[in-house]
Amino acid sequence: MLRFCNEKFASLDDGILLSMPSSRSASKSARVSTNLKSAAQPNGKRRGAKPAPIIEFPEPLFSDWIDPGSFQEALALHMRRHGDTPWHLWKAVIQPGETLSMYTIRSWASGKRIPRTLTSLDFLSRIERRYRLPGGYFRELLPHQMRAAVGHKLKGIAPAEQRRLAWHLPDDFNDRSAKERNEIVNWVSAS
Image (cartoon, rainbow, N blue to C red; front, top):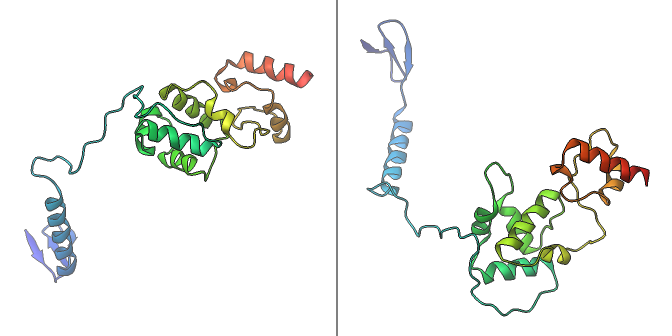
């Protein structure tokens, strides 16, 4: 049986105290649930336009263009050519378990950031494949061509030595077997 001790607490017969919501929080929760109900469609579907379907190789909206001189202009151009937004392009190139953010693609297209890691360069190659561009198209437009890619997994090697070795390591270094990686590191270190 429920007994009210005061306006904040109620007691059950077995001695357990229950906290009672104040009239202020009760009315707030009622407003929240009312707002949620009014925002939802009666049939449970979301409002607004449905997202465009993901097409592996979308047709370009226009076929003639002048190659821009910078990476961010080229990425923005090809996204416009194919009618992609950063979100839609991200959905098309991301795979389950990957952590690339949609905001990364947006920052590349706006020129705030440039891809430097091996993971980012892999995403660039996927974008090139999606837009049917030649391999390395975006990479050739990246500024600071004299910088090596970062993200090689080299255990037991000092950071300064890793930076020196990075110039000579292939982009798929992390995907190779441990035996192949050791052979490559030994060969590069010997030269």
